[in-house]
Image (cartoon, rainbow, N blue to C red):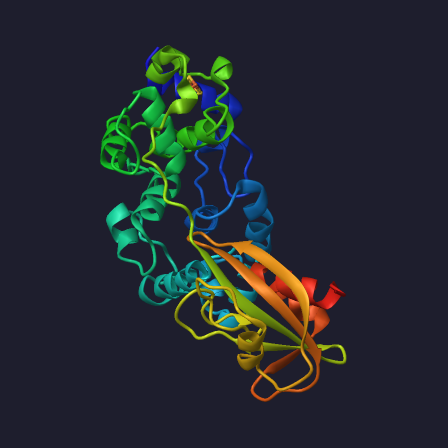
Length: 345
Ligand code: SF4
């Protein structure tokens, strides 16, 4: 049997049951996926795992069941609902895209890869995924999982990231007019459940007969990778200022990391640690600060260590919010606020 036929028949029997998915049985019976749900899930999944994204997906679709309803939502509500998914630029792009679909396309997603690409904030991967999954267009849907599967099936020796164009070309050669949506999802499922990054389950793999990496005896050594530069480290100070049950927050500038989000007041983030004197000089108020430890947080491109200073008092130019509202903060500030409010050093 051909590689395509083997993988599709495996998918027919083993497709993951996902909140946004129309499974192969229903799809064969003519049920079509809702482009809004496919698009939303793909945006969420670009930065997190299925188990982490699913509750967010369910929350978003319960609150905003259609793209028009999402488009009409206030920015702040969507940003708060996104908190915990990280990388807030995506939430801003999500809203820009929803509003363009609502305003310029009558609430209907374009049904081609090219049309989808014309929407703001909708990149080539998402356009290909929505075109294939929602509209059964023969689009080449290539993310990190698919790159890994291709690198193994064809034992590609060129290391990533230089191998990306070759991996994309290999994936394109497998795309066909027949069941393109199922094909894209079958590859995703294979990468997520069988051809896993560190320990591929080759003995359960439906395409083992076609796999050149398996034949080498060391499939997990693919994809080859160029030596990695170490992730840079930055340091900052976060200020946990309380006034009774309320905590002082600020709104971050609209551009840049975590732009537009509510946050704890912080110093700049820089390569060197902050001394006590520097930390006090950068504080948002002249009150009796004391050190209560530090927290570390990993962003995509760097790791941040935040020294925590805690005080009770008042300050100008801050936004007071009750402690129970802190759950809506981005993860890094939620972590810092929780530690700052509970650490008694
Ligand atoms: Fe991946 Fe192993 Fe299957 Fe090859 S045989 S595609 S390495 S799971």
